[in-house]
Each structure stands twice: as C-alpha cells, then as structure tokens.
Amino acid sequence: MNNDDLKEDTVVTEANDCASDVQQPVDEETAQAVEAEAQATEPAAENAAEEPTAEENPAEEPTAAENAAEEPAAEENPAAEPEVEPEVEEAQQPSEAEIYRERLIRLQADFDNYRKRMARDKADMIKSANADLLSAMLTALDHIDHALASLEKTTAGTEATESNPYIEGFKLIQNELLRGLDKFGLSPIESIGKPFDVEVHEALSKMPSDSVAPEHVLFEVRKGYMLNGKVLRAAQVIVSAPVE
Image 1 (tube, helix red, strand yellow):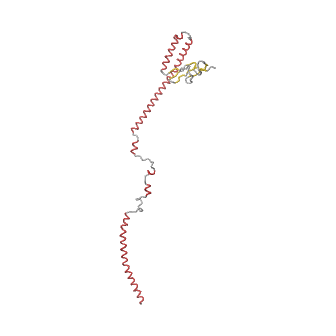
Image 2 (tube, rainbow, N blue to C red):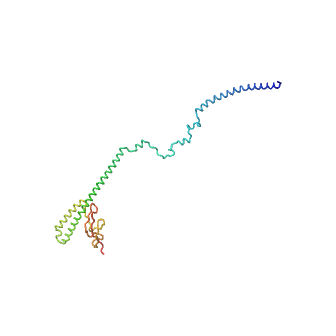
Image 3 (cartoon, helix red, strand yellow):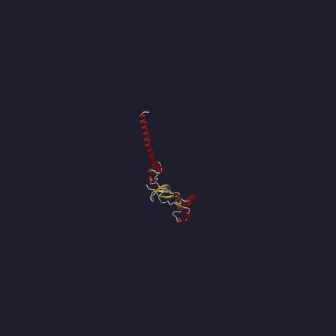
C-alpha cells in the first residue's frame, strides 16, 4: 500500500466519524420535536372528532333557505281561513233532539195542510153534488115563473090581478123555494135593465128600443141563477139595440 491510498482511507474514516457525530444530535432533536408536535395535535384532533363542523353535519344547522322553506304557509296565504277545532264543529252541529224536533214540526205542518186540503175538497164535492140537485130544481122554478106570467097576462087590467088566489099561491110557493134554495147558495140573476154581460147573460136576439139604452137587457126569456158566487145557469135575454 502506498502513501496515497493510506491518505484516502484516513480521510474517509474521518469523514464517517464526523457524519456520525453530527447525525446523532440531529436525530434526537427531531424525535423530541415530533413527539411534542404529536402531543399538541392529539387534543385538537380529539376535540375536532367530538365537535363536528357544519360541513361534516349540515343537517343539524339548517341554512337560511331551509328555514324560509319551513315557514308556515299562513305567510304565503294570509287570507286562508284558520282551521276549526273539532270541539267547535261539534258544537255547531244540531243535536239529535233538535233534528227530531224539526222533523216533527214539518210533519205537523204537512198534516195541517193535508187536513185543510181535504176539508176544501169535501166542501167542493158537496157543492158539486148540490149543483146537480139544484139544477134539477130550476125546472120547477121555471114552471112557476111561466104560470105567474100567464096569470098576470090573463088578468091584466082587472081587479082580480091583485086578489087572485092563484097568483098569490104561486108567489108564496116561489118565495118559499127561493128562500130554501138560498140556504144552499142559490140566488137568481137580476137581468132586466142591466148592461149585457157575456159572463151571466145569453143573448137570444136584439130589439130596437127608445126607452132602454143600447146593449142592455130588455126582456128575460129564462131566469139565470148563481150558486155560491158562480154561474149555475146563464140567463137567456133579449138585448136592446139603437133605433135606426
């Protein structure tokens, strides 16, 4: 081994010794710094794990948009009616007793109307039955009228007209019949000298007259009668006409 090789080995050995001397303290200081930093970061990591941030748990801290969406609909529609509590609705509904009472009132009103209608129908039926009977009696009254008119015409201008027992007898019979029939609503129609009325008169012919105004009844051929305010039989008359 020459001198040059010996020098190189010596330099390498010294360099390794220096490196080992320098590396030893650096490693210890680094270890202590790492250990201190680890101890300082451990509580922070634990606190961070115990207290999640808003980003990790956004459901626990709702945003302003979510709060606005969860606001009651009353603000959006202030005109909406408030909900009625069930107790108020039950108080407004009629009770069972009130319902039955209203039904009873309606039934009583219906029965009262039915009773009045039946009474009216019965009265109309009786009047209709009387109408048939009284219509048959009108023929007898017509015969009495004709007999009186014939007797008065025969005895006209004589003293026997006022004291004729036949005339008085027929008048008595006529008055008694009319009085009895009046109780059933029958009454004669007064026609002579009255204006002609198509409702109660039946014109047979017209006759010129100076003493009676035109369109008035001159003579009565057959008497008419009313029954309870209705025409039972129209009067047959002769109507006056103007003189040419």
